[in-house]
Length: 549
Image (tube, rainbow, N blue to C red; front, side):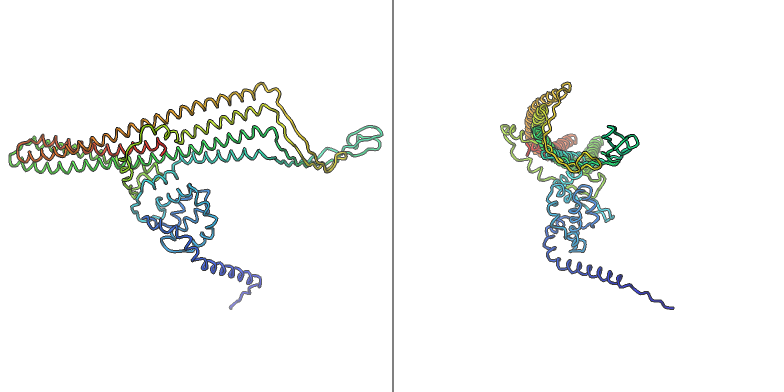
């Protein structure tokens, strides 16, 4: 038996209303498609230009969320727009782009920019096939600044200091306090003017007048504006501002340290790889010498001891290759750990820092420019702001020795009491002065003076320290540059000596020992040149930080 179910008119109208709204939304999204395509074109090129950026929305969201938590709306926009650049305009990007205007301001923040640059290097959680992901120096720096916990803690402390300064600034204006008090008494309070007795009704004789009900309440709205106290409030605010400036200078110092660590990590990794390549070339050359020595041994030209010498030299070269390979792996793992990636992730392909090696050959700065450049370092700025904060703190403690004078005004509403008006208001002044507190405020002011003097000495010491550091880094850079020049001359002589000795051995006028000595000298010269070139690059990176470049 077939049965039919009737639909109520209200349900049909609700369904029709929802369907109409969905249809209107679909038409609006279709109409907005050309506009959104033009607004999202800025996302297309960087993501298409970089390999390995065909991940899903979840991949990008997982990369951005941990480091850009305050920017949830912007992160959703970025993670939705990125796959659109590679696969065309999709529905998720259209929905996210509706908030584009509001998100643009947040997208300009340095923290979100670093987070967006870092999301391209994050591993996908969807289990996609492993593909080589190139990691340049600049990408590694941005990723390290987004994930390094020490640097992130410095950033958060700087933001906390800024919020602290804003908090003190709010004390300049008047404050308004609202309070409500309700009391339930044990009885009604009455007074008898005939017997001059007062108390609860059962204890009062004669004609009594209730002056307080059993339930009373008092509402107060009080406004207070400090007057003389504005002096120490202003100094406290300035001190907090300078502390915030010092914290932000510390952020710049931390960023410089992270950049130096990442660049040196790249250089150390590729230095070890260069040494491994030199050792590999030495092994191949000695392998050829082993084959030649074996042939000459069969011909009776050399003895078995000569062959053994060549084989021992080849084994030593293999040992050097193994050690260099291990050092390269260790340097790579430390670098990946610094930038926040998995040290055992083999899909990350480090890009050789050719720019750092090339810029290392530029002329060195003159010694006379070191002092002025060193004083531009964020460490000096941090000490300077700390000194200014201590000076303002000293002034604030001096203001606290004076009385506190403030302007008060309020409104009160009293219910349940006969002799108190229901509504009342007042305005007046309030003065308070701690006349005796066993020297607490006095010694606090002296302590702030000592602290300011200590910070002044600390600033002088910091200036000396950065100047000495800049001079030291310049000397190291000059020594590294001279080492490269000497290594270039040495390797030219070693190559010529090896070529001549090899020809003499083939002619029978030189021994195998002579050839091995020439081979060892050439390998040593190559190793010294590689080390000198990378040490020069490392020295230039350290010098750039010492001079606040």
